[in-house]
Image (cartoon, rainbow, N blue to C red; front, side):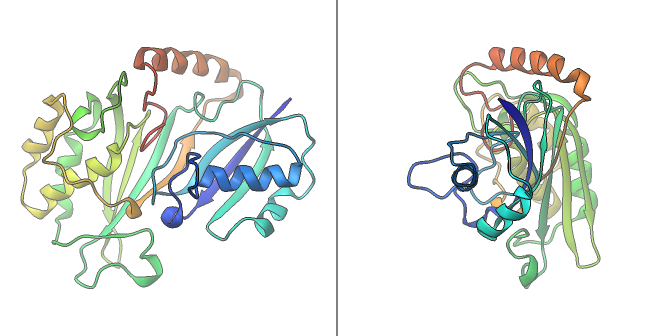
Length: 276
């Protein structure tokens, strides 16, 4: 068996998320069916992070194992066969120790929102969330800074039995472009289910002036999901990159991550955003 890494991009609007689901259109289901048709064998993808329904990706990573030789020009052939809202942007043979999920060092997301009274630009409406009230950039950044570091993010996560909600939030930085669109860059070693969208929803409440930065910081003391947080819409969220160590360090990274997952317990959400 040979292991291959796939780099993947998709518009999640019309998908019921990444993970395979009976009778539902999912990113994984479409890719496995199409790749399997070309290779004339069943294939199974392992992904870096299972994005939820409506969430997009420009830098998703998956791997597959197969004893079938991949045909030349597979990326171009897939482009002809796949629907327009999903693309495999690169395929390469990977080291045997590479694991799209367990080898990952960190995941990077972006969240786009606009408080323009007319909503999102029509050309970006599928990846930009309209915000009903005006928000202040400095207030949102102040609140975001209070969340950085290693914390228990239970207040921001949907609870899963046996799963830890301790994460290291490494970056939560806001910017605003010339069109008035706010973009949050959010990076962590891993994310639990709905964490990024909950972080954005909480910080945006501070940006509106309804909440304070102290309130956001206080959420880190809670050990249950907070009903006071309005989860931001899925359409604004995009997985943009996954970081991996050098090839020689992959096996050790897998060992460390698997040990953490065993501590997390069955069904842990530690592998990616929105449930993995």
